[in-house]
Amino acid sequence: MRIDPASTATAVLTLVGGPANVTSVTHCMTRLRLTLADPTALDEAGLRAVPEVLGLVCDGPHCQVVLGPGVVEEVTEAVAGAVAEAEAAAARAAEGGAEPSDGRSKQGSPQQGSSEQETGVRTALRRVANVFVPLIPALIGCGILSGLNGLLLNAGRLSSLSPALSAIASAFLALIAVFVGINTAREFGGTPVLGGAVAAVVVYPGVAKVTVFGAHLSPGQGGVLGALAAALLATRVEKWVRGRVPGALDVLLTPTVTVLVPGLVTLYGLMYAAGAVATAIGTAANWLLTTAGAAAGLVLGGLFLPLVMLGLHQALIPIHTTLISQQGYTVLLPLLSMAGAGQVGASLAVYVRLRHDGELRTTIRSALPAGLLGVGEPLIYGVCLPLGRPFLTACAGGAAGGAFVGFFAMLGTTVGATAIGPSGWALFPLLTGNRGAGAAVAVYAGGLLTGYVVGFAATYLFGLPRAPRPSAAT
Image (tube, rainbow, N blue to C red; front, side, top):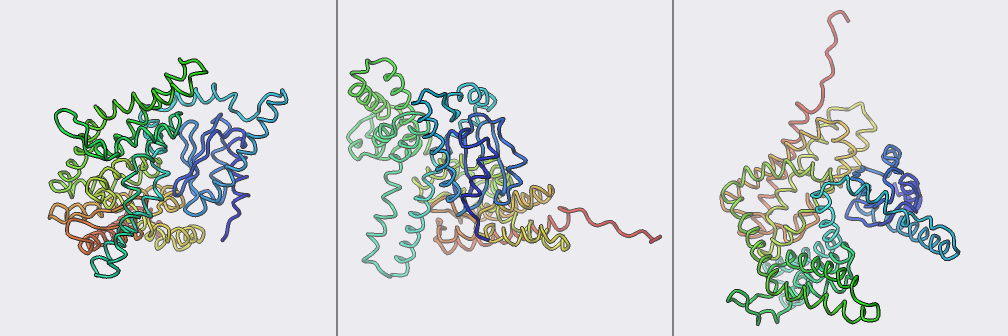
């Protein structure tokens, strides 16, 4: 059934306190992400009851409305348009001498009070996710093109087109540090282009002429972690300088100092330190899989659904991106993708067991295709989580699938993804590994099958209460 984005946006905005209560609007692959000036105006029960809303994750002023792929883009556009209209109306009212009503003038009190309720870790993870989530579409597109180029080369076809495909697929990843810098400055209140300018130092070929600790730097050393740190420092420096220089000199001094000081710190400290951290991440991931792959897969596959439920899974994007930059693929994503397989198996068991619950079976039928393609929120919020125990048995299925993939890593066959974003069946075009795409696809398919079977069996046997047997008297 085709939804009306405008009516859905209107319903959402009404239940979050109106467009004047919304201070920022973004989205990821499945979720509309709102920041509210006054979180107490949110009607959680009403918002969950909206038919198009698949789930809701709220953390202080930050509200994630799960809408699903495709739908979320259209609804976000409608919501952003309504919020922009409210802001324009408030600006006109302010110019006319009236009190602004967009919530921003009152933001200090409620926003600050709500933010104080957040833990430092949750806040940091959310803001890091906000930096990297907008990059996912490009990572997906370039990853698929890279995989396609590899298949064509292996098949000996269109070899003349390969350099062009390689350039298109690799250009974004080669310059991803610049985009990370731009998004970091935007997220933390700096000037985006200045954040990008400082982060560009990380990937500039000329850094090879710079000597630090007796060795020449390498372009790209530190990767996205170095770019994140450089842009964050640039934002801090920019704010410090802007608050201290005369207005007449601001346009000259602020950008100059903002680029110079963080640029030098990046060259002579951050690139080296971030490079060491990035190397440690790659070494740790490889060691973990080769020495304790089954146990690692068990834990990662079993715990990923709760992370998705809380909206914290996006905080892993910097680690995935670092591994892709280093090794050409991330070995963690295929393990984490097994969580979705466990949930598909659990939902199928619910479908079989609850034959008389027509509404729930309809929900499962509509959400299952998305679940097979790796979009787990419809099944999480529509099936497994409301029923309780099937959510736990779905985690068991994910743990079994992760252990399967991890076991083969211990045997010497690693499975990696050349891009992030897709999972489930949608991850097949992006798979590769140390023994080629064929072996990676086979192991990954075996992990999915294991997750389906264990999730189904655990849910069928233990995930739902059995109907009481009729007594002898009846």
